[in-house]
Length: 217
Image: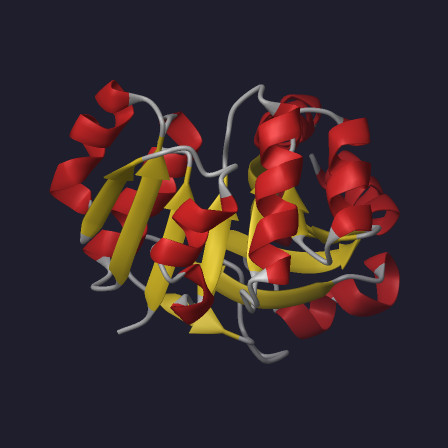
């Protein structure tokens, strides 16, 4: 069991805290909003009604003992930046900070080597990808220019083996799994025959994935 600190218990931070707690981890939540604190009591080991921009609050919460800290302070960019800086100074190993704009994300990246997330932007990007290619079930950005997609097996793939389809050679992407209602096949071999209800889990460069989905979609 690991210990995590979640600062800001609104929609994003509250969900993160809940999921960590459900996985059996120790979760310390901090928020200056009494309503958020009350809502989080059921899925946090400890909840503090306090201002995280006060370094003494963070020190008293022994944030340095945390495996990681999550900063999600809504539109309060100044508070998010200051809190992230204090967490780094107090020796927190890993920091995940929610950014509300690209510039906010750049500043967070400059003041501390935090992992910056843009939930709204990333969610919008996933929706756009799915709308543009109806065959895509899920889209997960992995980093600069690379993504993983879950793709409904197109009709022209049905009844053919992965070896026959030569997906890697023709489309420059890699099928890392195939799943359907009855089974999950991890790293399927060339002899695997694609079924009509299969979902292909594919990883590759964004440009190659986009070409693939448009060709077979």
